[in-house]
Amino acid sequence: MTKLSVNINKIATLRNARGGNVPDLLKVATDLQKFGAQGITIHPRPDERHIRYQDARDLKSVVYTEYNIEGNPQHNFIDLVLECKPQQVTLVPDAIGAITSSAGWDTKKNQAYLTEMIQEFQRHGIRTSIFVDPIHEMIEGAKKTGTDRIELYTEAFAHQYGLGNERGIDPYIKAAIFANEMNLGINAGHDLSLDNIQFFKQNIPGLLEVSIGHALISEALYLGLENVVNMYLQKMK
Image 1 (cartoon, rainbow, N blue to C red):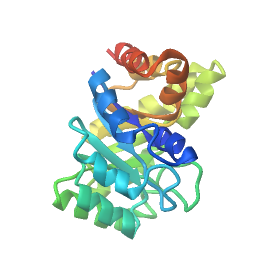
Image 2 (cartoon, rainbow, N blue to C red; image 1 turned 90 degrees about the horizontal axis):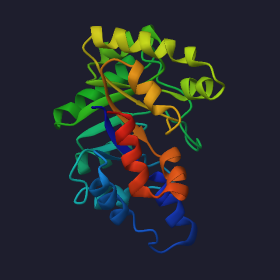
Image 3 (spheres, rainbow, N blue to C red; image 1 turned 180 degrees about the horizontal axis):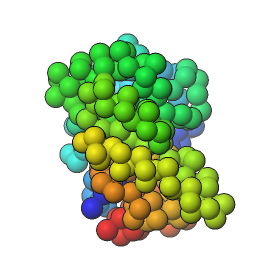
Image 4 (cartoon, one colour; image 1 turned 135 degrees about the vertical axis):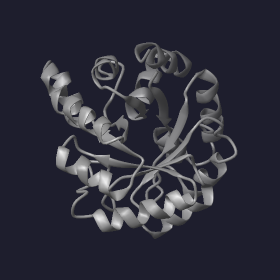
């Protein structure tokens, strides 16, 4: 079964909108795991507009499933990850001030830099994953960095699927087959939802983990958090 890691950035956004500690990020993380989520993902950004660096530290004692920290490996982020020592770090090429992730790494252009970062994290026992587009050349470049996994950037699939074009998954199937041949683990994330997750899961060979935040939290406003977590788990069986 593909693991579900829930990104809780949107919970932090809601908390920060009013100040104080409502909703309680640590309680939500605890409850998500109790409801069946197999991991917790956070994506702290330099401006701390949702997840704060202190949140990452506080969550370390709360996450008992898999702790995944995403972000661009700048100095402060590297220091935070090495301090928290999550089970997984996912490297994402976010520009400063980006609203959300918009592309995977150019693993050829950034190969030396990524290799250095990956070696540093692996030296501390942290599994690594690189955010990539479903392009063979980029996956081949990822392999050369020594990363443990790739995370397929799924916005293009989600957009095409929403338009009724199921063939939009074809590049992802080919990318997954290629990654499997290269012994790279496969994660996926971005704009996956209850509408498209089952189709994606059924067609991607060797899919180990999905990270879902915005859609899951939005769906939970209507359906309830515990119910939504279990709906995802059922669709991924």
